[in-house]
Length: 201
Length: 217
Ligand SMILES: [Zn+2]
Figure 1 (tube, rainbow over the protein chains, first blue to last red):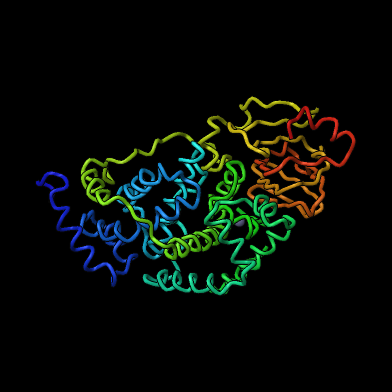
Figure 2 (cartoon, chains in turn brown, yellow; figure 1 turned 90 degrees about the vertical axis):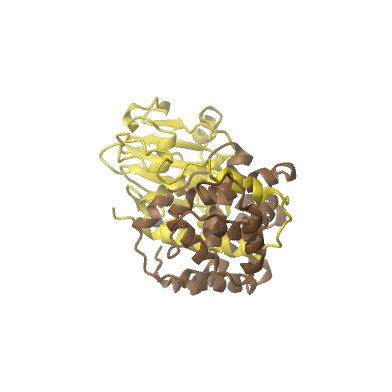
């Protein structure tokens, strides 16, 4: 691939990705990209995630006029940072979500969203085996869909609209404390997925 | 490090959702950088974002975007060439996310005095709330106050106690408008905290109300 001019194999890659997309395990694919740069694998990830990244960043508040550009930047960073991805630490969707979130905020605020280094992931003990994150990810999705409406609402307003507790409180015309307790209740339900009695406060 | 006070679930969700102000997010990221326990929880709240991303109805992207991205891949720096890690000698007192904004030891900052024994150093952005380092001398108390919104405090040096408990290096006090408190510094050295609020504080004493316009809280 190296000797060819950039972009020459695009057509083949696009066709391949359309055909195989449905059955692909995205975390496994991204894990392979982490080990070795591979444009055909990248293209398959792109076709699946780019349209979702765009949907997300528009909801979060990136102007429609800039959405294509920011989506492109996010997807380029997937390639650039792929070597930092650990399939046993996070599902591909989770990892790409954090890239999309950080870059949207950087774009909207012209300020870098403070984050703990992704490198530090490798320091945390990896208890779960490979593939388990993917299972967890499905169960998270299921658990979210089963949340009571009032709890789901505050979760959606947080993740999809980027609203602060105070902002949600005034939108829904409820006290700040109620927003926080709804989020906490939702988190309690989601924690059961992770076997979460390990947390102490 | 022995950490006894951690981030609230609601705060972690907001952080993962990208819904925190710069100042609040900085306190959260700083705590996460030193607390494996909360870091694991943050991985879970990030996974909520991942699941929600998967659940979205895909938007149409331009037909030529993939082609244009693929054409750019060869020009991107690869792993080996990517940004070199600058070997700056780091003050271990300053959590990694804060090093983006603080480039010298805490003692060398240009502290601004509010009242004797209390000084602050502002983070370089503006917002509805406060985002600053606060330095309080032993035996001094922060002014009694309540909150219209949330207040996050992370101890970087020394310790303080309030109605909730004792807070030492690495601990976060994650408070909301349910609490009226007056933190008292109980360490031998100055207590230095990174604090952020998402709304102005409400001081509950007359003196507090008088200094509020001056201190910018
Ligand atoms: Zn913690």
